[in-house]
Amino acid sequence: MEINGKKFRMIFDYHTHTTFSHGKGSIEDNVRAAAGRGLKGIAITDHGPGHLTYGVKRKDFPVMRKEVDRLKALYPEIEIFLGVEANIISVGNHLDVREEELPYFDFLIAGYHYGIPHGYCVGNWLDAHGLFPDSRGRALLRLNTEMTVRALYENDLKILTHPGDKGRFDIREIAKACEETDTLMEINTRHCHLTEEEIRIAAKADVKFVVSSDAHSPNRVGDFKSGVERALRAGLDPERIVNVEEL
Image 1 (cartoon, rainbow, N blue to C red):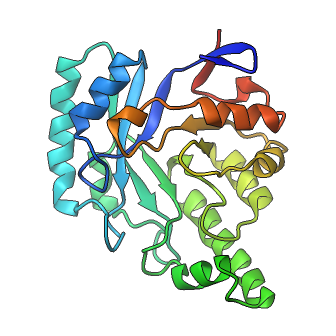
Image 2 (image 1 turned 180 degrees about the vertical axis):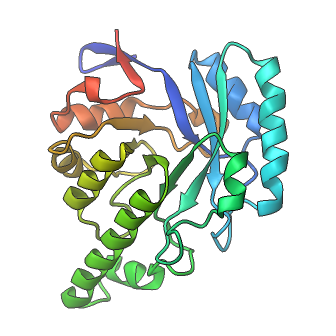
């Protein structure tokens, strides 16, 4: 794909959703779409089970594991992984995935979402809609950043998804934690985060980035153009994006 006069391709897409949470396609639909677009790898990463309305059911983890393992034999041309987009919360290990559930997954990714108990969701929603005084907003900045940083240090995360979305976050402090934990920072093509300014801030740390489709339907699997465009506008060296290759 040509972007700003240069040709790029996406190598893998490690953030996609299926009907096991609130996506529109099956696991095989996403895999077929990724293989058809020439990707070398795809991960199925449905929303963590703590979400009140569309989180994956815990009982489905073994079902999903079995399906991913079945598809590996059918689609040998592409690597297929099972993960979960865990929800960052303020208690416990700061994720909504339990330790005994970890063996089901090849890796974890995690991000902040509304609709999660113990996540300051009501306050963040009110703040986003201008219904909180700035002093409360500054308090949320501290709390949101603290729970995100703790989630990074207390868990082995491959990707921090759409950092900065749905609340106030100190991207500089979070980028430092991603550097120290070797966690990829996501440039999401479904959400506007990381924004251009957030990319500039994060890039000051020694971190790597990943562009993700965050596909909720198979036709968006492998979508990366807007993420690369945003990164280039921010002045990011594309070599720091681990899943995009310049041709």
